[in-house]
Every structure is written in C-alpha cells, then in structure tokens.
Image (tube, rainbow, N blue to C red; front, side):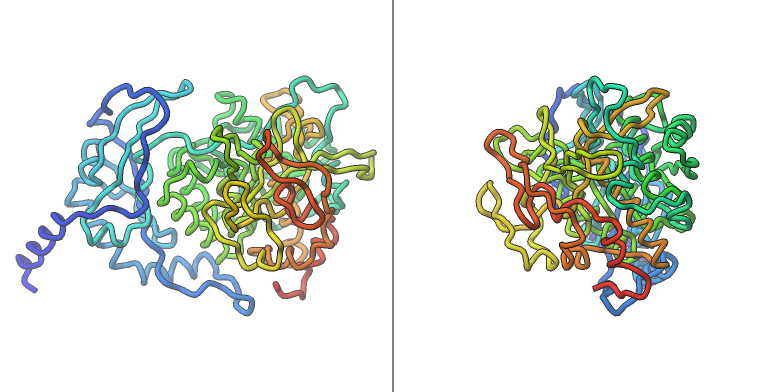
Length: 526
C-alpha cells in the first residue's frame, strides 16, 4: 500500500485504544502527597506475550539460552517492530530490546508515559517510603494492547518482603552454622562440591560485603565462594542502607554457599517493585554470562497483593526458566497461614505458590553435633512457615495423586504450598555475619537457598540441569523426612502437619543423598 495510506491506517489504529488485560490496580495504602513531576524521567519494562511454542517434555532436551533467543528473534520480529513504532509516535525512547526475554524497555518523561498508557500517576508516602502509584487500568492502541503481556514500572509501590527473621537475643551457642545444617541433612561435604554450577540469588534490596562473606566461611572452615553482584534495572549492591535487607542477602549467600561450597553465586539486585522482581527473574533465567542452573528467591508477598499482569509476566519468566532447565526455589513465607494479611483469611505467598516453583517451607530443628533428634513445623513467637491452598492456581499434575486439603477460606481445591521444607525457625537458626556483626537468622528464606545448594550439587553430579523437579520429588516421598508434628495456624486460621504431604512443610525436609540419587547421572527425569 502507498505510504500515505499506511500512515492513515496507523493514525486510525492509534486512536482506537483498549485496556491492557490484567493491568488494573487499586489505590495503594498510604497518604496521597500530590501529582508526580511530569518532567521527571523514568523507564518502563514492556513484556510481549510469548509466542506459541512447545515446552520441553520428558523426551525433549532443554533449550539453550541462545536457541531460545534466536527462536524469538524470528517469531517476535513483527511485534517488536510494532511496539517500537508505537513508542516513537508517543515520544518514548527505546533503551533496550531483548527478544529472548520478550522485553522492550522504554524511557521518557512521566508526562509522556502517562499519555502513552492512558493513566494518571500520583505520589504517595507509606511506612516511611515515598513512591509513585496509579489506580485503574492501562490502555494502548488496540493492536499494541493485544500483544502486550505487561507494562511494569509506572507504579513503584513495594511488592515484596524478605522472608527472614532475626533471633532477638542470641546466646553465644545459639543456632547452627549453615554447613552444620547441610551436614545434618546429609549434604556431601567436600570443599569443592557443586563446582561448575552457578546459583542465581534474587534480591530486592540490601547488599553484601566481601569481608562478611570471608568471615562467615572462615567460621565454617570453608573457602569463600565466588560471588558476583549483577545489577538489574537500576538496582545495585548497596550494603549498609537497609539492615533487614542486608541480613537477607547475607543469609542467602552464606546458606547457599555452605550447601554447595564449590558453586559460583550470582546475586541479582533489583528494586522492590513488580518491575524489579519480574526483571530480575527474567534476566537471571536468560543470563548467558553467569548461566545459573538454579535460582533462589527469598522475597514474596501474598497472592492478593499482585496485579494479574505482574502474575502473568512472572509466570512467563518462570516458564522460560523451566524451558531452559533452571530449577527455581522460593520461600513460602514467615507469616503462618495468613501470610501476614490481617483479613481473617488464609493466604499463600507468591512466587512460591506458582506451580513452576519449588515452594520451601520451614521447620524447627533440634540436633546433636551430628544427628537430628527432632523436627517439627516452625511456629513460634508470632512467626512461622507459610503454606496452604492457592487462590490463583489449580492443582498441578504432580499434586493430582495427593489428597490435598480444601482451602480453609471456602473449600477451594487448588495448588498446595509448600512442596518441601528445611530448618527455618530463628530459635534453631543460622549463624551468619551481617555488616560485620554475628547474627542468628531464620525464616523460610533460609530453606530456599539451602535447597538451592542441594540442587547445585545434584546438577554437578548428574552433569546436566534438573529443570522442574516436582514430578520426580512427588513420586518419591520416601526421600524426605516427613514432618508430622505442629501447625501453621495464626489464631484459628491454618493447617496442621500430617503424615505425607501437608500444607505446612510439604513433602518434608531432605534426606540429601536420597534426593540426589533420584537425579543421578543416567536417570531420565520422570
């Protein structure tokens, strides 16, 4: 068609706008302090819907990152071009394109971004933090909205909390060194165990000091691991600004490294927003330089606090990880069955509730120097393991053979959380070094990196990635220490431990050698 005809068609389509599905937001909690500065510059992450493709099955090998990127460069070429043309019409700069991640990052003034996506931003203050936010839905020209999965970054309200808790007044001998816990669960102990593997660690704040890492591993009589800080969407390794977040980062590094002392750790630092969270998981999954085979996530929040577009975009990033053979583990939360939500209902934590994630619950551990003497559900001092029935996700195939309990909210049948568990009670917590100080920290955010360390060992031993391990694990419940005592009730809301899988500790804590044997070299995933 002639150029003037095409231009006229583009103008007509630009005037026909529609809602970007799932972008609706409610007003945030906090005080509205006024309009945003229209001339301020910001970036948004626009994720395109994934092209239809077969995911690896039991008789297919995982894709490589290069293969997935090349495949999408071809299948998404038209959509990427259309989105960039829309950006130019709206006066937005394209600062990054990544077909493998289905990502186009746009930058402009807040005034231009508000006009482009049909929204109004306001400034808010809550809990000592200032941020911009919006309410209602986003819109775009109909041809653009039809192919966009999510537009993230306009709204900056915090999305997650770290799932760690400090022991308030630890004695000298309180808790365990991280490698002591690993040995109690039967992790192999050679100093180079996990060599050749990379564990990706997702952080939404805080930072680490190399001196803390060195001191912590010296206390464990281990050489410190190689730790690489990876900035994501403006995030950075910033120790000393947030002691709670610093504690989370230190716990993740020191527990994962204790579990797999020979593994390289890549720590992805992003802002605590839905944009930062999704960007971090997407970047880690597609990171060709560090190539993590395992991702550990110790941040999250109740399913009810997420927009549908953020849930969908996170789900697509997690599906990419699964297709690439990356095993993703996430803490199930420290707020018992309510996940800290004060509405009288049970809630599970996302992303642990995703069927693509191995959700990690928490226990209280008692032990001698070499043997576990007891293990119960973690529920103490107002905190305890999260777990329950998802309000968002249906029962996945790997849980179909189980007799899952109905949700205490209304008898809904859905995805059960968590899948597995490990020591998490601060009273039996982990001795770590944070900002130069010895601390005892627990939380389900310790269970996730411990399991991440185990899968790094498994991948190193098998010589290949494990990918999604759920089906194998659920078929071999005898590879776990079944936790049958305790509950995660908050008041009257919650679930009790039981024989077999339960909504407190899942299948249980690991018998590491037996879990590893399920994925040994020569065994095909089930």
